[in-house]
Length: 366
Ligand SMILES: Nc1ncnc2c1ncn2[C@@H]1O[C@H](COP(=O)(O)OP(=O)(O)OP(=O)(O)O)[C@@H](O)[C@H]1O
Ligand SMILES: CCCC(=O)O
Image 1: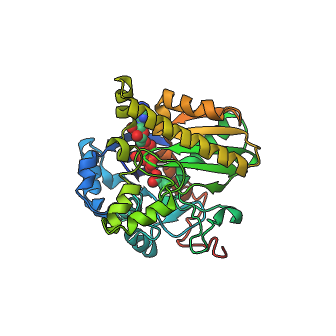
Image 2: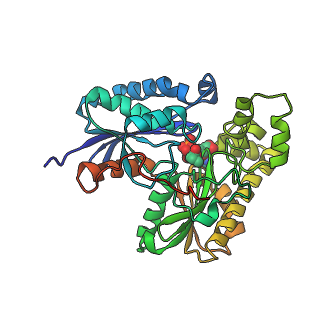
């Protein structure tokens, strides 16, 4: 049986594309390609960024002298597909079609499966996605929004939240399936998940206007005022959507989604930047408090992760409001490339069978 595998892993985020090449479990090359807002703004939809991001990935691999003909598999972070169980899925026609139309909306990770498939097809190797943003383990009680026509959806950083939660459990010498954790993923978007014994039973829809505002998203906004804005006759649908996802949050207030730039402005005495940065921390703390109620206060540990967790002053602002709930641990950045590779290796090593998309109907009764 073959036991040497080389995998290319592609993780398109809202503000960056992360790529990695793994020889079995070892990462031999990793790169975060940060996209300037002007580069992304030339495209009116995310799916139109496909050729631009694929070209940059291939150029980068070429520049590093990585011969892609030696690859065993290509894996992309999965996108806004139909709600599905967690796991590793082989890319198929139905999936490609749902990624292209954005079954549950527009998202950078819709590009992951498409770019992975394109590269893999040319090499005659398989393409996979692992734990996409639509992994849905919500308790049914969490599905009610209060508006019968609009059930809540589970759209969050499932891959990193699950991977980091497992790592924290291992580091605490416990089993993820035996713990209650609150995980706040704080990247370009922010999601705060209530993990109860291995399942994310509630989480804010970190993409389409629920929860804290983030570097580039508005989070929860007053519904009535938003409706008035939509019907003011002043904006097209895409313009309003962009104000909520992409140009909301820090970007909307401060015209940058880069928290490091915001920290520089604060250090230079910009009090408005300071107030807005503090408000983002405040809203994250509030969401964590809400998740603690979901877990009836039985919280073993709170985890802060994602790019924003590198900011010590930022995490301190959150921790001072939540330290009465449980201990907080900070795992900055994310482990998504590693988690994707592990999902692929489980298939290549015959430890798991890939799931077939779409494999389930979830939450249809609510
Ligand atoms: N060292 C750092 N200190 C403070 N903030 C940082 C640091 N590094 C990155 N960030 C901030 O983290 C945010 C981006 O996080 P990340 O790279 O996890 O997002 P992404 O992958 O593009 O999006 P998402 O996580 O939503 O998929 C940006 O606001 C960035 O400025
Ligand atoms: C909320 C899904 C992941 C992301 O876009 O940040």
